[in-house]
Image 1: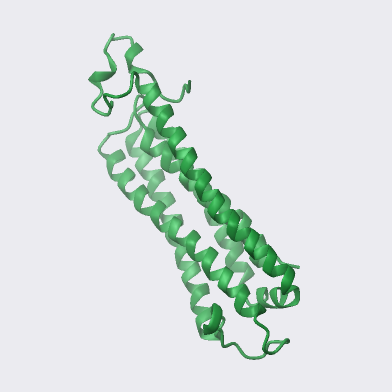
Image 2 (image 1 turned 30 degrees about the vertical axis):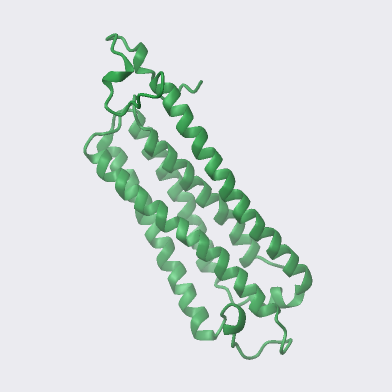
Length: 230
């Protein structure tokens, strides 16, 4: 069993788990409750990996079909913006780890500060992505039948539209996860400020942390896939 959460059924004061307001009656101990929640989150993350994995496979198949168009299309992406967003998300993973550590060591205010820093990183990421999207709209680099960019080397090829279909689909889905993560962290930051998390109960912070690390990991794959094609 995990040692991440203290089993209040064996605390030095002899109190049972029922004394904790966060304890659910259908579990035997707080440790069991934490482990069950974490397993549930891991199962959810597996479905997320499968979803993005299918998109990665589809991208690879289309890249094999339109190799020249995909290389040419990726030149329209702002590599510096993508690299900057990568740094932002890597830093946000650090602040998220620190937030979990603060929560499990009874430092609610510190946990809240780190969560707000992580939220700030999410906002920066989305602002940069909005800037990139705006550039694509202006240039006509749109998905599917909406693609109307001029000056392509292979006139009439569907490869360019296919590239940006995958680009908007995958970065858009990833961006949705960033927004969901930010909303969850706002909820956690408010609770942390109230002192609701401690060494016996910090499950929500830990689970959202796992979700956020997956968001970061997906981007680590998206960045070279789209911005560094050669």
